[in-house]
Image (cartoon, rainbow, N blue to C red):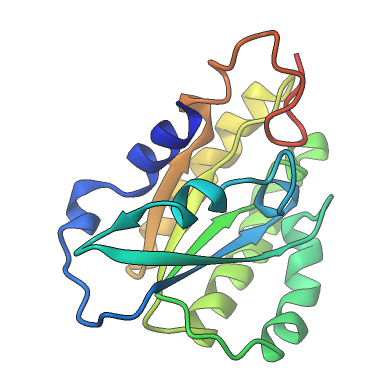
Length: 187
C-alpha cells in the first residue's frame, strides 16, 4: 500500500503523459538522507525497480544518500560526489530535509543550501526531471509544514523541478504498530 501511495504522489498524470523516446531502462537516482538509502527504511527504489512505467520502460534505480545529512551538509559535498558518477539519469528524486527540521535553520539559509543542491543536480544532468519530495518527521509536524512551503517556493522558481511525493500523505497515516518506515518515523 505504501508503494502505491508513493507512486501515485510521485508520478502525477501531467508528467506521466510525456512519452519517453528511448527503449533503454529509465535510470532513476534517489538522492538525499537516510530515507533515500537502501535498507529497511530507505526503500523508495524497491517498488520502482519492480514495476514498469511510461511506455513499458523498466526502471533502474541508484541511490546517492547519506544518513543524517541536511541541506547544508549536502551543499558542501554535492559537487565532489556528483563528479564521480557517469550514469545519465532520466529522473532524480530528491528526498532531503527530515534532518533539517530537528533544528530548523533560517529560511534564507535553508533555501540557499537546498537551492544550491537542486541547481547542482540540474547542472550535472540538465535533461533529467528532478522531483523534490516534501518531507515529514514525527514530532516535527509544524516545522515540516514550514519546510514543505519552502520546498514549494524553490520548485516554483526552477521550471525543470517538479514537486514529488508528499510524505505527509502516507507517513502520517502509517499504523501505530509500525516501528519504523523511514528511519525517522517511529510511533
